[in-house]
Length: 304
View 1 (cartoon, rainbow, N blue to C red):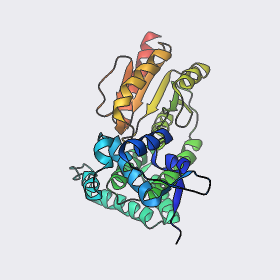
View 2: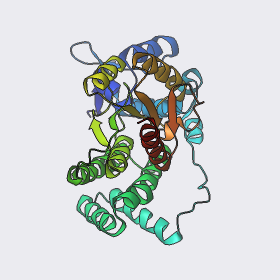
View 3: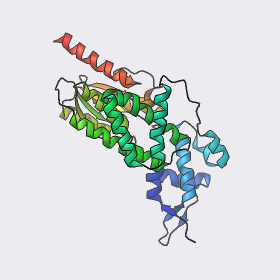
View 4: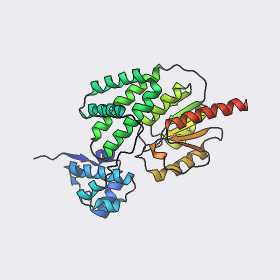
């Protein structure tokens, strides 16, 4: 009987663990234990890929790989956060509606999800739709992925459908030209795009001139793009999955690359516990970003 297996390039893409790390763990810890195909290349059984994916998820939450790799499956499962739901300001009826949207994703009902989201957009307007539907829904999806109740492909389905909707809405917004010009992107190894799209929609709705560059831009290219587009602000998004310990160094490095007259903003759940840094504004919420936009305009009006 044939067993589903993956080559090392596919495992690297699927887990986020580099080929060098996979080979090093094989030598040092005896895991993973790939087989060899007819050409002598490494191939990894599906159950090992699933375990590697879980180990990477726990590493992103601060656990050390040496302790994870040899741990029994039951211990790894116990480390996966099943966080109690905090007291929320979301009205009970709204919470139920969000759960219904999640259920449509779990049912793989793409058409039903899109229709329900369009209805909420029409009812709430763009600002409340982003803040009261997409932001909490994205957090719920992240929690479901962390605790294993959402499959990877279901999280991807949610992301693709939601970003398609946001891009369609952003394309219809008029260009007010009030400034500032905001370049939006993320650093290498940060592929999550919804945070950027939420920020872009809110800023564009307020009349900012947004320049979206997508995700995973090298720092040098971010700096070059900011100067080429004559950006006033570079805005980065960090998801909770991005290794928090790397964020301060990346922000300091980019701050040194950017001209002093270009502000550097960073937002998303990934920065909520990052210490304040000189020359960088950190935003835990979209409301914070809107307040910073108003402050930027007020400062420029006073200067002129």
